Image (cartoon, rainbow over all chains, first blue to last red; front, side):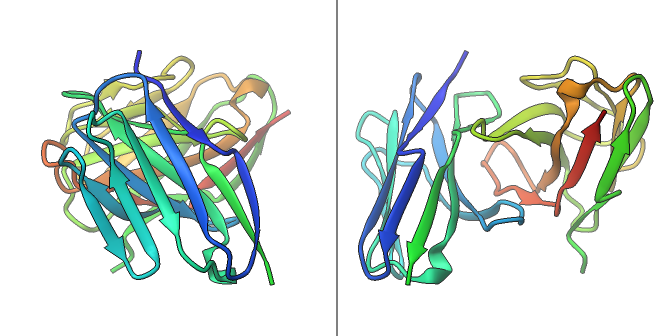
Length: 110
Length: 114
């Protein structure tokens, strides 16, 4: 079945440094979503990517969808302590439900 | 507007006991989902529903049953709890799946099976 992997599993950064997490699917995706989960909280939707090579920005966050629609990345510029949490990608195979990656846990040291 | 509400938030069971988790959404969403979250494994889909009266199996359905008698409610049942079912359970709903609507999650239910 479809598998979604994320790297790294953990990332510790100093406040102000950049952060990137990568998401890779074993199958071609119709679209991909990204979620953020704060410690002790629930996942919250960030964005959805649909088109091959799509790039979307939300303030300091930049999301990319690979040309082959099998990978994606989330880049945070100049991290802040409010960015702490686990970032999940969720890939949807054609006709299937979303499959979540294991997540990347980000900690930001002030 | 409460969004997605899960009850109970915490529960401790003994092996073999049964229980039901309730999920309620007030957004008139068609689709509802139950996930479990375990450390290092992300969210895995247990069962889902595409409308009132319908249910379908997800990735890890064994040991669980669900019902969607009303559009706004989605119940997850454990008939005979096992320690392997110790997890955090999240309910989610979405407006439409075909156009990949975003998932709205409840706050989670932490279940411990002794």
